[in-house]
Length: 417
Ligand SMILES: Cc1cc2nc3c(=O)[nH]c(=O)nc-3n(C[C@H](O)[C@H](O)[C@H](O)COP(=O)(O)OP(=O)(O)OC[C@H]3O[C@@H](n4cnc5c(N)ncnc54)[C@H](O)[C@@H]3O)c2cc1C
Image (tube, rainbow, N blue to C red):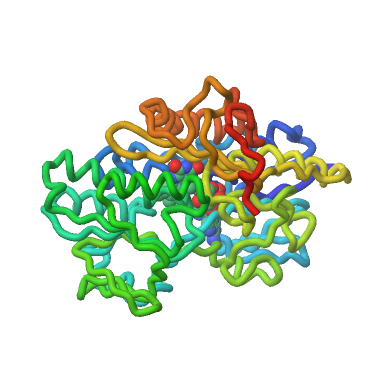
């Protein structure tokens, strides 16, 4: 019997899942349909490099359809809603899709309009974000003519995509202003809602040390209540103010808005309550969730999305076969952290183990929690792997989906609670 598998979102997770499922199911067994609102696939880690002239928008964008294997149907239309009672997806262009299995891969969206003062007349004048193509391009122009002043990088609130990206922005800004010979004229400030530079203690200490080394002031527990673009200041809920000449904002994130029009599917932030081991939604057993759309306690990162793919696709197969689900997704995340001057740090962790020193994926691999040229090359090479290995649904040779322990100095107490 031909099954209908509908994948909502054709970004990182939707593309790799559709391609993997096409390999698992014969064309006569399952029709696979991917829905996305546009045909523009952005390699989002590349957005970090655009403001500094290290990448152009053209370098990081490809047509979505070309990333999907033959035998996968694509529909380009915004999603209107999902009816979990009737197993139907309604699209804005009037089409209705029936499904036996639904995979939600609609990621996280930026909601700057939720913060007082953002998107005012100073937006893309003295207040920017590099979290989308338009913002990253506008910021590149601004930085090229910037002659000095206070540059404040601010995360409004968690969760955000790639929680290390704003730190990487600070490190690259230090490098960029030094290259231009104006570092003395620039004050760099990082204002975060967290109580340290990062969420995980060992990595947080290492990253705070790097900020200090590079002369970036760290302001913690700063919960941004408003951005006064005209007055050039961030105001926190507890009344603190941080003045700026140039603000680089990572706005609030939420799940895709159609989730709020789909009764029973999502939570109040429009993320989807999901089992963090099987990736099955809590809404219905025939709905699975991959990537940033899920509310699980893993980082919102492409690496996480990639590592989830294997378990999720296996569970779609098991669900349709009536078998018990595989509960082996361990929260594995792996992030290269660009630190400027052609160096990068690497962190690798999961739900139970925080980022630790050592080597990845084994004793002769890349250094962990330590700046190195090799890690920088790894960060650059990742773009090639993204288009040619990860999206087509292949495994990266030598990199398992579950967090590798060999090579790590794993003390008995190095676990997250
Ligand atoms: C600046 C930046 C730097 C990053 N750096 C890294 C990094 O170095 N390493 C790393 O691992 N990760 C990084 N990430 C995170 C990574 O890009 C995401 O975690 C990953 O893309 C998540 O995949 P996804 O499939 O969940 O979402 P996405 O890839 O964002 O895909 C979601 C898709 O859903 C579609 N969609 C949404 N709503 C609708 C709708 N209503 N109708 C139709 N379609 C819809 C969107 O158009 C999109 O194509 C970075 C992200 C940013 C922004």
